[in-house]
Image (cartoon, rainbow, N blue to C red; front, side, top):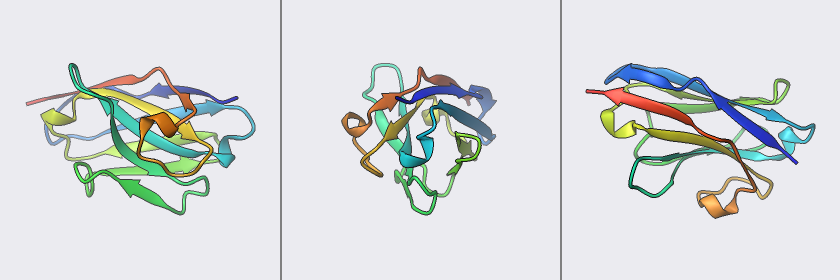
Length: 123
C-alpha cells in the first residue's frame, strides 16, 4: 500500500516557475515508478512525465519537454516536479501516481494516486 500526498501548487505568472512535491508513505516507495498527470477543467487527465524506480529513466510528454523536470529522492520517499517557463495552458490539477509495473503513460496503469494539487498560471 502506498499513500501519496502532493504539495506545492499555487498561482504563478506565465514564464514563472513552480515546484510541486509528492510525499509517499510506505517502505516500498523505491519499488515504484512514479508519474505526474494533470487534469484541466473539462478535459481528460493527461500524462505529464514519469520516472523509473531508480530515477535513471524518465519520460516526458512533448508538451512539457524542456520545461519540466522530474526527480525523486528515495531516501525521503518523495518525487518532485520542477516546472519552468510555465504557460497558461499548464493550468490544471496535478496528480502524482505510483506504478509497480514501471514507467507508464496511461493513467489506468497506475495503482495509487494522490489527491492532487492545483497549479494556476496567469497570463
